[in-house]
Image 1: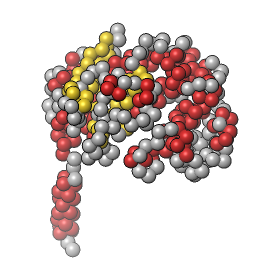
Image 2 (image 1 turned 30 degrees about the vertical axis):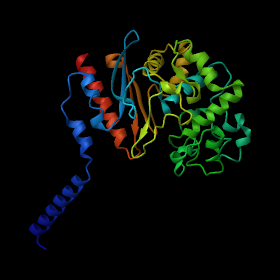
Image 3 (image 1 turned 180 degrees about the horizontal axis):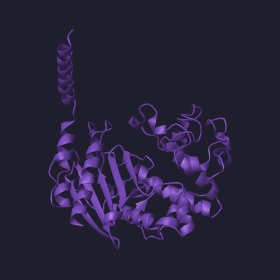
Image 4 (image 1 turned 60 degrees about the horizontal axis):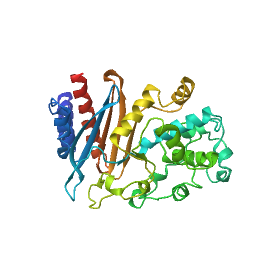
Length: 345
């Protein structure tokens, strides 16, 4: 084959490859990303249905803890109940921020040690969790334990477990994913175990400690430890694509909060007012982060503080699938809202 013919073949193959790849491009994501930015946050939020969300709540917490709300869609789509800015929402993994703060406070008080091992606090797990005598509390907080994630077990979300004991059983006697502190891998099992450790050290429930040491001082009266502790009518409905039932009654161990309560907590976390002193804040800074996202069937949360505009932006969306599409759309929505706020600022 001549040089010119070879180049021609390569061009044809490249062209065909481009055509094939364009066929698989998720065009709704591309369209949402490139559309002109609207002038107001409410205009952007009003596009939620086009993004595939049944309902959305956005809370912008500005300087002075003043909250502004934006909503569209439904709190409950069956009854056509409009999205309510004061609805409770399952914040999923955002709950880890509260637990990490609790760990920092207990370490500061000398009730926990970041350098003690998992088997020091839960000796019954030695031999049931690999490297239990080498995994420290610090590694649990920072997702560096290597313990498998119980929510990654096959078909977990088809029938989620409701108790910590049932959840933990899913990973007992399983090999570690890596040796302690040799890698990073996000694992809900880490925070499940931290909760069990705090329960044992305190002699009562971890959320009770969070209530007294974190929520009450910040006057956060609309944050709860369980779906069992709330009026179910106050909870925003959650939906999974292709599944008709409302998921709000599922008891999956998530903290519930209003967007405003969560925004005030995120501000307090970032300005340091959730901590008793600078030393406690520095301790927290050494072990965990200051923002988080959350994803469980029916509920997506993004909770971040944006220093350049001095605003906390909370976004709740209540329609989920696990192929990544909804999460991508949620992030696009959130990032466009922040861009609008920056332009206005």
